[in-house]
Image (tube, one colour):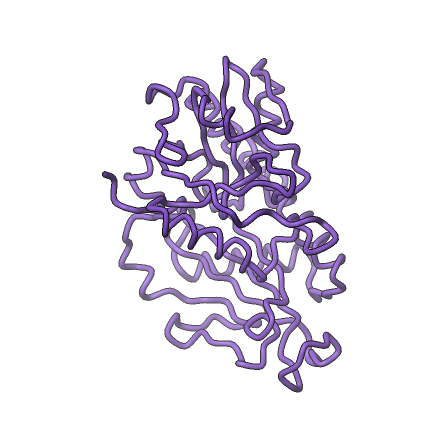
Length: 310
């Protein structure tokens, strides 16, 4: 049996113990990077976040990440108070202060800020947003090559009029519960269904299967609008790989030839099993082709971003 792992498992790097972290305009040593217990993110999960990777000094797909961040914050009337260029500058400054040009992962967090009293109403956040950027030296763990074990869980993705799953919000309890349920079942992560019982996403990543050479993923109605998910769909369409956004069941997932997860950290991570059932024969030709095409897309995108900034 494989040791339990997650899609965000990274190789140990002692440099991460000496990080400088951006907290509200200042670079602060890791052990001193704190926010108020009155912060709306800590108190209520009232905030949005983005995860980005640094390649050759560029934050890959930066504009797509900013589109999602600014749209999400607008939808919940959270005024970031910074432009996209301001955010790029603070991320660049944080990476530079930590000696990073690549193999780094950022978690950018923006909350509604400190509250005057420990209650829910947004108007109690009177002093503007809290902005934190953690940029770590980060290389996916080699053990991820063995694949992730998923367990289908009873916790489902919610309806948009409850809490829209497209919000990359600090309110992640729904996904945390799914992860706990998977862990109790002896798996690495939870495979979540939508409200109608169709396969949707995991607690941390978007989910794809391959059947008879076709790539399938959910309709997108109940999952995070992942930047990597969108790039994989785009790659498939541009390179003659049949791809479908559709409803499908656990029955169809169990019988898949391949399955993989997508996310900014791990790009494409193989799924080894679902509910104890091995996926395919262990070979992943379509997944490997997508990985190669994605790597090429990252390189081209980073080169274009660098050229545009010169």
